Image 1 (tube, rainbow, N blue to C red):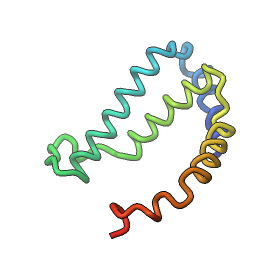
Image 2 (spheres, rainbow, N blue to C red; image 1 turned 120 degrees about the vertical axis):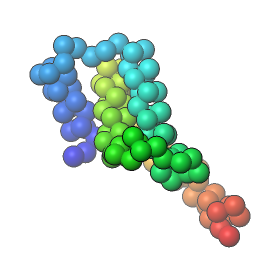
Image 3 (tube, rainbow, N blue to C red; image 1 turned 45 degrees about the vertical axis):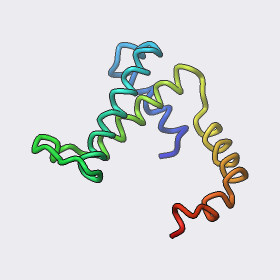
Image 4 (cartoon, one colour; image 1 turned 135 degrees about the vertical axis):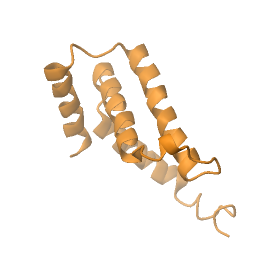
Length: 109
């Protein structure tokens, strides 16, 4: 599924199963909460914090999908075409960072 289709799928889901989009501020708070859940899994599973027994069943993919769902909601309700925005961002990063990481001694040890 591409980004355009994903945006359409979320919009259709909202129309079929939700009452309406939450307002943008509520969705921003929801996004922050979902990113926090991803951070918790990463910190405990891949970082130095120990993983609690209750966290071992958490699915990182599901939590990342929650983040994506809310991002798609925000894009829809603010009129952002994520396909175009992402293509533009990738082009910018390619121009700006073409050699940046190759010349970074911190990651080229």
